[in-house]
Image: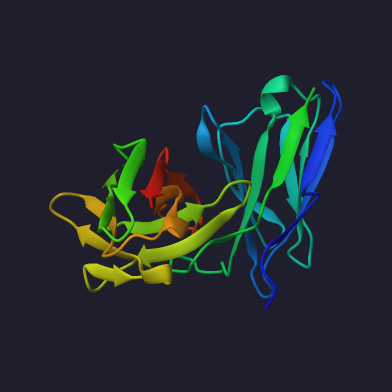
Length: 117
Length: 117
């Protein structure tokens, strides 16, 4: 069974540009979350999608957005890139679907390394 | 607010000795707790989780974790450390919301484990 797949793995962008990162969750998983990892701030939650709907959102500016498709694949977009957006962006997948929190494991991909110059 | 603390930025241990990586948490209600490991330039790998039941949880690669409700701790332990265990370890708590389920994790800052040959 394939794990969580993120593309691209590495990319370099210029300030002011925008970037789109992609995530394919584990087959059958319907919840996809995104996290930003930086040396200074650690791992911070960006947002979570379930059945094409944003279910939860972290404390990030509106430049950060995401979406989820009917096949559960997800993309996140960062517009007007700033130097501080340089980070490892991690996607996580989980079965989801419970109306109440369950003990499902949350699995992470290898991440997308974004460098803004 | 729910939070996780990893009081040690770095832990050094000799190969073959037991290791402990500490984690304390603060949550409302019953916690769902996780440990992840991150190797250089990689994503997060799931090690183990505590949902309910036995306070001693067994995970991957010989790791275990001890849940202590009275001390609100969830320490990661291994009886005999290997050089290959050298990595960054993250403790996380799953946030619980009334109503809709959510798979948002709050992470500690991480502890760098160095196993010395």
